[in-house]
Image (cartoon, rainbow, N blue to C red):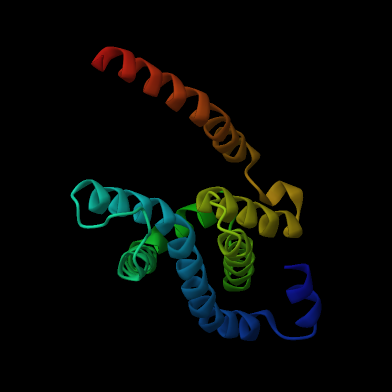
Amino acid sequence: MVAVHWIFRSTMPNKVDRWFRWLQLASSAIFSFSHGANDAQKTMGIITSVLVTAGYLDTFVVPKSVIWAAYIAIAAGTMSGGWRIVRTMGARLTRLKPRGGFCAETAAALSILFPTYLHMPVSTTHVISTSIMGVGATKRLSAVKWGVVQRILWAWVLTLPVTALLGYWLDRLLQ
């Protein structure tokens, strides 16, 4: 965001926003692809497990057709409905203009694609949330609604122990 401000420092803001409205379409497509590429790994594992269990596969090797189906399904879902989540995040955490949305989506996409290439899962929600926080903080620190950030952080911290306890409780209940 700092680089975008510096590069376009002498250009009228309305003109810059017009350009970034179009660029944001590209950045959202890249973000959708990165989301699909990373989050699809969980879907691929479940589908492949079912195929092995049902006897359609002899070994647990994810077929290319399952990989592409999962990529396309999650990317299409993100492109068709994910904009609402990004809009909500952009309005609740901080107010984003087109150039800020472009920067947040591009930074998030790159931050997701690198671990995906290394076959490491990351939370796309965590990545886009912190990207939006970073864009908001470049305006001024008070532009970020830190109360919302605090609630998000508590949700992140509590998710793992609560789900672990729930899993333990359900396991004991079903035995």
